[in-house]
Image (cartoon, rainbow, N blue to C red; front, top):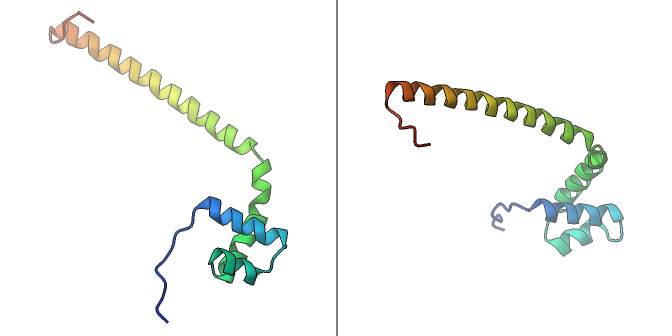
Length: 101
């Protein structure tokens, strides 16, 4: 039997299959036939879902990380503004930039 080409499933599909496995309404074999996925793959997705389920409710880690990113970006914006102002004044003094701005 020839091997099937490798398939990449979307995260939405994986979560749908894993959630169906967690519910337990159907067996893993039935789910594998329904979704055309190997039973071992369903078991692996189910295990990942159960291990990472608590991350959904943490929330504080992402907001804290994004706040750090915003601070870094604001610092970079300030730095670039200073550089632009300095270069603009230097070019004006050199006569290479018109004062039309």
